[in-house]
Length: 459
Image 1 (tube, rainbow, N blue to C red):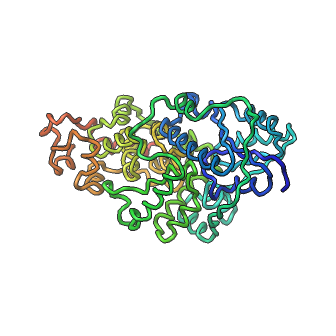
Image 2 (image 1 turned 180 degrees about the vertical axis):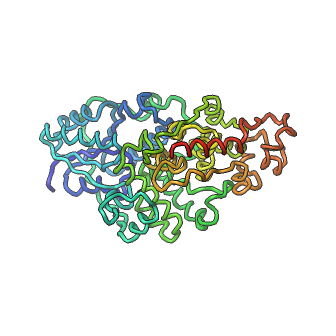
Image 3 (image 1 turned 60 degrees about the vertical axis):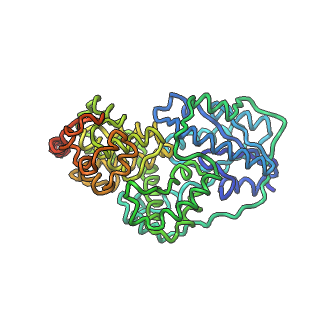
C-alpha cells in the first residue's frame, strides 16, 4: 500500500460497485474514509437550478450508500459547508495522505476541483482522480482536426470504434471509520428537512442502489423493443435516468445490460455527446451555441409561461406532460420534446426559461443533457433540428397518444370527453366547456407563422 489514510469524496457516483475513483483509492490506501459534502451553492436557494425532487432522490441514495458502506466496515460521513473548509478539516482530523474523487465536467465542477487541488497542494496532500460518469470520457472522441464533434452521427460512429470498459468486479474494500469527527456534520435526516422541506410522496423513482438494480432489470424487459415503443406516451420508459445521473448504477453496467438493444445504446451515447459539448463550449449554459441565434427577440409572454408551467395551456398533450413532471419529478421523453417545442416555437418563449423550469422539477436533471436537449429543440445548439421544424401539439397527440391514455391520466378533466374531441381540442373545446378544462391559450397556426418570422429575422 502506498498511503496510510485516503479520503474519497462521493458526488454523483453513489455506489461502491464499479466506482473507478473508489477502486483507485482502495488499491493504494490502508484506510479509506468516505465523505459526501452538501454545499450551500448547490442545495440552497443560491442555486436557481435546484430541484427538490433531485435532492430528495440524492439523499435517499445516500442513505442506501451509507448502509452499504457500513456493511463493508466503513462509515459515510456527511457534511454541510464549503468544499475547502470540510476537506481541510478532514485532512487534519484523520491525517489524510491522499484525496480522491471522480471528476465532472460542468464549469462549476471544474472550478470546484481546481480549488481542491490548490487546497491539497497548500496542505501537502496528494490528489488523485478518476473518470467514471460516461461511456467514453469527454475529449476521447474528436474529429480529424482534434476538435469536438458538433454533429451526433459522426460522433456516434467514431465512438462505436472505441472500447467501453467492462464493469469492474467487486473487490474487498479498505473502508474505515474513526472516533474522531471533523466539524460541519449534518445527518441525512436533517439534510432532508433543511434542503427539501416537504418530501414529495408522488415522486416516480426512489433513490439507491437496490432500486437502481430493480429498474435496470425491469428495463431489460420493458425496453426490449425500444425502437418501436419509445415514442408511445402510454408505454413506460426505462426510468433509469436519475439512477445514471446520481451513479446508483454505473454507465458501464447499463451499457453491458443493454448491449443488444442498439437504439438504447445510441441514447446512452447522446448523453456522452452533450457532455463533450458542455466541456468544449461551457458558454452554452446561458447562451446559444450558435452565436447568430442570440439575436432572437423572444416574446416571453409571462401569462403564457405561467400557464405552461402549470399545465393549463388548453393543449391536452402539453398539459399532460407538464402535470406529470410537476407531480412526479419525471416526464416521458417524447412529452419532453413536445412541451419544449410548444414553449419555444408556439408560445415564442426563450428556451432558457424552459431549461431552468425543467431543472427545478426533474429528478434526473443533468446540466449537459438538459441544456443540450433544450438547445436542440430551439435550433440553437449542437446538431439541432432546423428552425422551421415545429411540432403541432394536436398532431403529436394523435401520433403518440392516439387513445388518450396518457392525456386522461394527467388531465382528468377530460376523462369523460370522447377521444376524437380531445385529439381535436383546438376546434372542439366549445362543446365541452363544462368539463372544467382550459380552452387553448393561443392559435397554433398563427403562432407558427410568427415563429417562422421570428427565426427568419436573425438571418
